[in-house]
Length: 141
Image 1: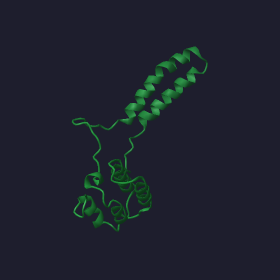
Image 2: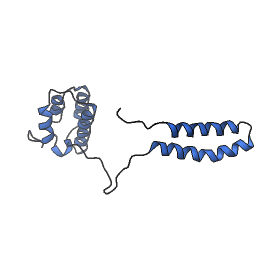
Image 3: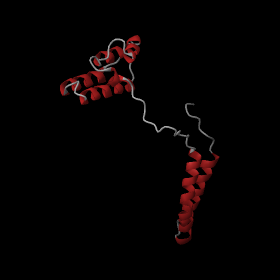
Image 4: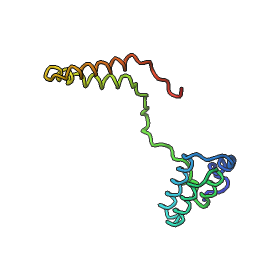
C-alpha cells in the first residue's frame, strides 16, 4: 500500500495548499479507475471518490482521496512511445503547399471544362501565394 513515504504523496503533501490542475484531477481519477479494476474499490466507493475528486481544489484534498490505493496505481504513467522513433515538428507551410498542389491539377482540368473553373484556379493560386508569403508564426508568443 502507498504510505506516507510515497514520492507522489510526499510531493502533494509539500504543496497541499496549492490549487490542483485539471490534469492532476484526471490522474487521480485514472488511479481510482485502476483501483476499481483491480478490485480495491467498490462501485459506490469509486463513484463517491470520483465526485469528490471533481470537487477538490487543492493537492491535499486529492491526496486524501487516494488513501488505501497502492503506489504503483497512483504514479503517473509515462506516455507510450516507440523506442528509437523521434517525432519531428511538421512544417505547416509545406503541408499547405502540398495540399494546394494536389488540388491544382483537378482545378486546372476543371478550368478547361467548365465556365467557373477559372475562378477555382485563381482561388487555389491565391491560397498558395498567401501561404508561401505569410511569415512563420512563433508558438507561445
